[in-house]
Length: 364
Image 1 (cartoon, rainbow, N blue to C red):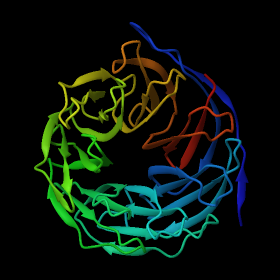
Image 2 (tube, rainbow, N blue to C red; image 1 turned 135 degrees about the horizontal axis):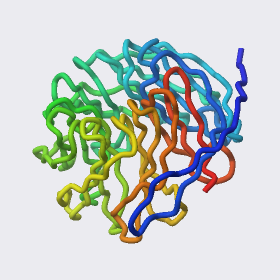
Image 3 (cartoon, rainbow, N blue to C red; image 1 turned 90 degrees about the horizontal axis):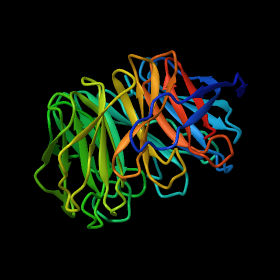
Image 4 (cartoon, one colour; image 1 turned 90 degrees about the vertical axis):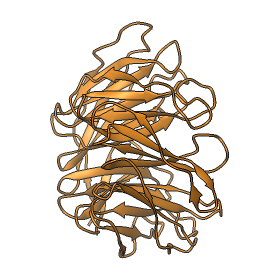
């Protein structure tokens, strides 16, 4: 039976800003919605096709994915609990079988679970692909430009990524394995050199680098290039921070308690890293969006040890940042996703914490 949880609202305001500061960001806590044990990652999509944004959360401690169906007002109805493999670490949304309905792919410790969506918020029984030693992250992209969705997974123990090419009907090729830096904890697919092909970027937590792997066409990739970050990067995201038309990178660095911005030179190489100290300690996840309504991409980190959220606003000189908000969560935070969850058209936050998802409405 579906159960509606409607909880409380409290006001959180920003704390720190300096130098050519962006606008201060304000959020209101709408509520907290239960999920499984030890949530590890969170994604947003309209799973039941009602025009409202829903959430899916991977639960490392219970080996499940929880579906939360959005009401469009910032509250969520608990939907299906979906068994997957052991220790799910990451998940992505995509239409992997070409039927126009949202599916999920989940990176477990030593397997990938494919959850085919029925289009009504429910999913078919997981199809499991055995792979890997310690999978940590998964990302989607059309890596061979055939019009069919593929995915790539990072294996921290092996120091590799595996690219699985989709058939368009929900099945996949054997993986193409590429060596990257030591202990990749996060992977994304993004075209960093604007050649129309999806490249691969990993955050390598032991090497203190990102690896950039340029797609050279078909199923081939160039030699990975390494770029220095802060200490122990565990998350990587992208955005055009300086508005030059190229994808820049940002990492959350758990060891140095900061975030590193890498500005793209326009050819898939990057300028010297610039790091921004975090209000919180041990960032565990990162997301990019315009929180300040100035048409510049900002970014947010969730910080596991200090149990809070930090907003970094893009400054008057695009591509440089200062803190625009710091918000206490009071429970370890492990994942974040952005979306218009409350119906006001602003960029809100959904934060995965210890056994729950917190919804923060952007009231800036």
